Image 1: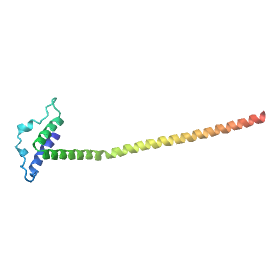
Image 2: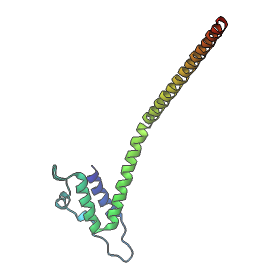
Image 3: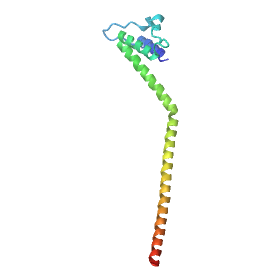
Image 4: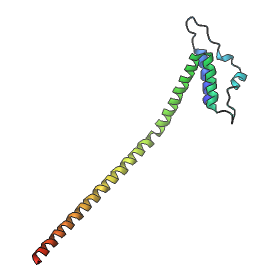
Amino acid sequence: MRLRLVLVLSAALAAAAPAAAGAQPATPLTKLNDAELGTYHAEKGKETPASAGRRFLDDLSARDAVIASNVEHAVRYQIHAEEAAIFARQQRYVIVAYAVMWAILLAATAAMYLRQRRLAAALADLEARLAAKAKEAGRAG
C-alpha cells in the first residue's frame, strides 16, 4: 500500500515540480515503464516492502534528490495524518482508561483512610480500657 503511494506521489510530484532556474529539467518519471517499476516490487520471503520502497527512494534520490525529498515528506505527512486519525477515534478509550485509573486510585485512598480511622478508634478504645484497668489495679492494691 505504501509502496504504491510512494510510486503515485513520485509520479505526481515529478509532473508538478517546476524546473529550477537555469537547471536542466529532470527526466519525467512518466517515462518509467512497467518493467522498470516492477523491479521495485518486494518479492515474498526475499525482501520486505519497506526495503523495496527504500531502494526506490534511493534510486529516485540518485536521479533527483528534490523529488525524493518531496516524496519522503509527503509520505511522512500522510502517515502522521493516518496515525492522528486513529488516535482521534480511540481518544475516548484513552480518556476512559485514565478515568478508571483515577477512580481506582481514589477508591484505594478512601479505603486506606477509612481503615486508618477504624484502627485509630480501636487503638484509642484499647488505650482507654488499659488506663481504666490500671486505675482499678491502683485502687485495689
